[in-house]
Image 1: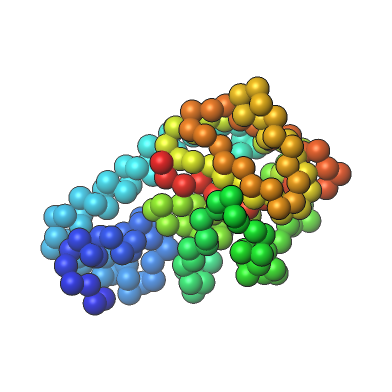
Image 2: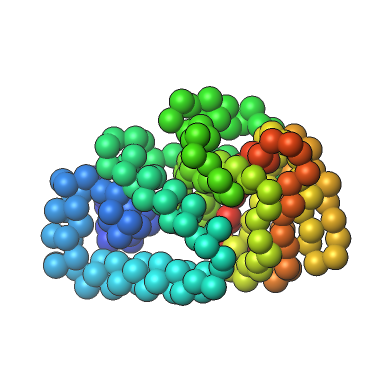
Length: 205
């Protein structure tokens, strides 16, 4: 695979893709061969698996309205990678972000809202150990949650919503950006007649 040493191999992201089931057959065989002969690689794989399990347990109390869409989005994304979609690293959201920064994903026919949409729908457009980026549609509301280990950021694409952080209400329209501080209760209430479509990003703290 052209890696100079074990650390470069680990830092490449191939092990995260392997654990998520997003490697090709050739890559899977290569990872398993490396793990058999390299304790550091095997230990890193176990560490990634433990981290994913911990994340799942920490979010297990979220209402189903949030769990199911993101579970299905994760399955969909890994299947797309298996079929050959290149792994992407969408730009990190910030105060200067524009919806045009994400045009290549927003315009894709396979990343649109399905007809059977009900409460919340998500399509992941990029994943790295640093950040998960998704297009999310919210019909009426997204329930209260708190993030201890990741920064959540929103860029409004269509529709309008209020995001309440503790007791402070932020009224958002298309083009608006908002970052949620760590350890803060927050929830989303849609204020438009159409679903609120957002670029949502969760960045490791």
